Each structure stands twice: as C-alpha cells, then as structure tokens.
Amino acid sequence: MTQLLESLDSPAALRVLAPAQLPQVCADIRQLLVTLLAQTGGHLASNLGTVELAVALHYVFDTPRDEIVWDTGHQAYAHKILTGRQAQFGKLRQYHGLSGYPTPTESPYDAFPVGHAGTSISVALGLAKARDMRGGDQHVVAIIGDGALTSGLALEGLNNAHGCKRLLVILNDNKMSISPTIGALARHFSMLVANPRYRYVKHHLGRALERIPLIGLFLAKLVIRVQGGIKHIIAPQNVFENLGFHYLGPIDGHNMAELVSILRSCKAEPEMPVLLHVITQKGKGYDFAERDPERYHGVTPFDACSGEMNQPDAQPTYTDLMSDLLHDVAARDERIVIVSAAMCGGIGMTRFAREFPTRFVDVGIAEQHAVTFAGGLAARGLRPIVGIYSTFLQRAYDEVAHDVCMPCVPVLFLIDRASLVGGDGKTHHGVFDIAFLRHLPNLRIFMPRDRTAMALALQFALQANHPCAIRYARCAVPEQVVAGGLPPFAAPAVTQWESLMPGRDAVVLAVGHMVFYAARAAQLLREQGLHVEVVDAGALWPLDTATLTAVLARHTRVVTLEDHVITGGFGAAVAEFVAGHAPHARVERIGIPDRFVEHGSLPELYAELGWQPAQLAGRIATLCHAQ
Image 1 (cartoon, rainbow, N blue to C red):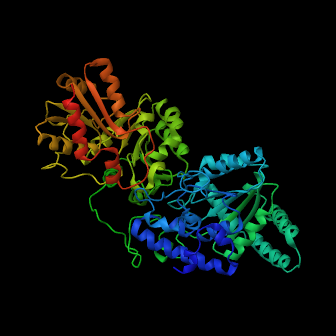
Image 2: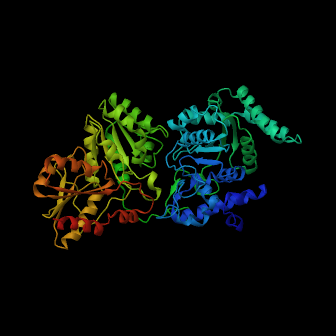
Image 3: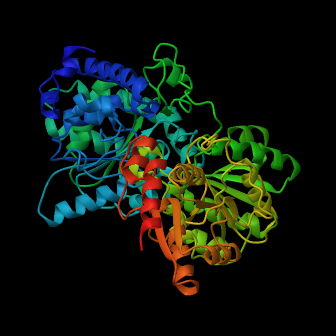
C-alpha cells in the first residue's frame, strides 16, 4: 500500500486528486482488503468487485451531503476505508470494532443501517422524498447488486420511483448473489449486456460527441437523452425504461475514467431517476476470489499468498450434520425438494444441489416467494424443505402464517444460524424466530442438541402432516463440555424432553447447544454443593407439558436458558405455563435482553450476556439461595 491511500482521511481529500491517480487508490484499497481480511475474515469477493465504484462515487458526489445507500451492506468496505475509517479497519467485525455493514452511528457517511438485501431503493426513495419535503437539493444514490434485485422489495421500490428527481440507482451487476444469480431478471440483464447493436452505437456515438469542443453541461444532458432514444429503438423491452427510469449502460465497472465520466453525466440529470447498469467482477484483483467468488464471498482468516482458509476447528457444525442427514434421507425419498433463497452454500446444500439437481430450487433473494412456493409443493404431495437463515426468515413471516400454517401443509423449515452469529452482528443474529413462530397454529418447533436428536426431529418432520421447523446454531456441535460428555439424545420420543443430570436445588431447562452450557454450569455448582437438574427441552414448541408438570412437582426454582430474545421466547412460554399451573414456582429466564446485540466473537458475546458456564453458575446459585 502506498502513502497515497494513507493520506486520504475523507472523501474531500480524495476529490483533490487528479483523475490519473485514482487507479492507484483502487490498487491500494484492494491490497489493504486482502491483507486485513486475511487476518480478520469478512466479505472479500463482493468488496473487491466494488472498489472502483466506491472511489468514483466519492470522487464525483459531495458526500456526506449527497447520500449513498449501499444495498445489503457487505459490499461497502471500500466506502468505509475512504470515509475516515481506514485506521480502524484492522478491527473490522471484531468486538467493539467496526461493523461489517453500514452503520450511521459509526459514521455520517453511512446514510442508513443495512444488512439485508433489497432495501436500498426503498430507503433511497424515502431519503429523496424527505429531502424534497424539506426543500433540499442533494443527490441520493442507491447501489444494488449481488443478486439483490431479485428481491421483491427492490422491485416494489423500482415500481414507486417514477418521477423522483436527483435519484440514481446503480445496478452492480456481477451475476452473483452469494451463489450465481438465477431467474428471468438475471437473463434480462445478460440480454442487455450481450446486445451488440446497442453497444456498438453507444460506443461510437459517445466517441463522436466527445470530440465536439465546448460541450459542457448541455451535451452531458444530451448524451443521456440520445442514448435513451437509441435504447428505445434497439432494446425496447428494457424493463427499467418502462418503469420510468433513464437507463444508462451497461458500462465497465472497473474502468475508472468511464465511471467518473458517466457518474458526472448522471449527476447532471436532475429531472428524473436514472438507473446506471455497471458490470463488475466479483473478486476482482485477487486471483483466488476471481476464480471462486462463492467460496471467497465470506471468508474466515486465510493465507493471502496461497488463498487457503484457516481451519482451527475441525468439529462438525450443526449445518454439516443436517447436510449429511438430508442427503441420506433424500436418497430414499424422491418427494423431498430443497428450496433455497440464494443461500445454497450457506445452508450446506451444495452437495445436495449437485447430486439431486431436479430437487433443488434456488429462487434467488426472494424469501417470501420461497415459502409460498414451498406451500404449493406441499399441497400436491411433495415434501418441501425451506433451508433459510433465521434472520432471513423474518422477511417471510406472513407467508409462513398464511401459506403454510393456515392451510396446514407439511413444509419443513430448516432454520440455520438460529443463534448469535458472531462478526455479522445485529443484522444477522438469528434470535427472534421462536417469538414470531411459536404462536402460529399447526407448527411444531425443535432445537436438537446433537446428531441423534437432529436425525429424529428430521424423521418426525418428514412424516408429519403439518408444518415443522428445526432450528440450529451457527457453531460446532459441542463435545466434552462436561466430564465424560453428555450421552446421545435418548428420550422415548423426539417430542419429549430429557432429564440429563439429576438435582434437588433447582432445574435448568435448556434448548439446543445451550444444553451443554447448562450442563457445564451444573457441574460447577456441584463443586459448590448445589445439585441442579438439567433438562434438554429441544422439543421447544409445543411444550412437553407432561415432563414440565413433573419437573414442577420436584422444583420451585426454574431456570430457562436459550440463545434467543427473552421476550416471547422459550422462557416466556415456560413462564406462561408456570403462571397457570404452578404459581408457587419462580422462573428465572436467561436469554437476550430487549436490545440488538452488536458483533463480536461468540465467547465475547456470551461473556457480555452472562452465558459463560461460571457466569451461569453464579446466577443459578443466587436463585437457589434466594428466599
């Protein structure tokens, strides 16, 4: 990295550079990204693809007065480096360090908080409307890409943008979300890119106009209008023009001179919204990421020279277990269909998609469609499984209620990342799904602690005539958390709870991987002379009221432990039952308080929340000693 980048502490410093210096700035940013992300991990390929775009935007527009909204947020690292956060970048996604996503509390250059796909156009429209109502004249820019335009929310925003002034939407077209982008819109973009007649006329007309002296602002506007007229003749089916946008492109998103020139032209068009179609390469400038952008989308720490990812923990994750189980079951049951919303690799279904291609459907970043589509499959005798992150299932709540639970069709939801997720932070922590699912009729929810329980829950769900959900954390399956480890799940049925450790002083009801933390805390308490019963309540909804009633006959001090918000979660369900059936019992709920949890490693976040075994032991001891 050269001193040039080090000298850029704000976009104002960038804007005094000569255009010829900008490619060096881009090279420096790429070097910094590879060097630092090799140490911290993070989103690599998507950010390497947007370096020129970020530099050109801050070079042309008067940020932060002109507002930039980055869709999804994981492609905004170069933006962060250019906006005064370069010195802090080594703490990206680290505890009390920079967020991996735009965060207005972190910088005035982050116009709006974001972490989910498809939001930028709607946000930008809101900012532009507020600007107009307040009498402002600044520009608003939305950058959408990485497949986010397949999101229904993005299409709703495009549909509502007609007539909006000083609004620029940039389509960062890299043909990828995390997995390759699919669907009719992707094919439409490919058609626009591949149209040789349009590209020929655009190129030669632009060159001819550039040779005319003293063209100034007038010709900049004329270029936009002439190009628009040409597109109506050559490519009349351009969906963006039909929605009221002035469409420009496609252009090379790594050609700095062309980017700066056309962004200035876009800035000179104040009367109608403009959509600029930019072609970029995900992973640009780092050979390993260019060749395999899906693998290098989100990286753990890696060796920058060899590209090899560090693998400090070889233990299988819950995602790994479910992937293996599903593959074996699907080989015997041809009714099984996996539905993914652009997360094939993330949910561990790459092998399934390869070996059962006709039974794997990727709908793009369209979670609502994924759920309702699965409802239709189930209504005609198939066994659809929606593999989805907890944080993304939030986007399809109405469809779960209206199109799965109300008709009571046997859709299985595999809810991955149903827990705190570490460095991705508050936009991605999967800690709300119990609360918004458990009140829906006809739905049964499991959170297995180990492979045996997971296999039984999967078997139960695929035989049920109603919807089910199996949620699991983003972590390795714990082993040897207590001396001798915990035995495999052995309850008579997967719908029943299992008592794992006896005790007379209190009982802890825990779910999923938190069972292991409860067991370790109980072991520490035994060393203090307190005997606490530990119950695996992995069949978390409906509650196993028979076992719970028996537990309440033995204990008046009840602790619930979950990696989920306290409000409306598993502990709340237990407290509701206790209030009606054992009002003499005291329930202590341990989970996430009423706030969004920031990013950090899981051990750091668990310590902050008081979930480490010694901390849990202290809280349980306090309850045991209370009168």
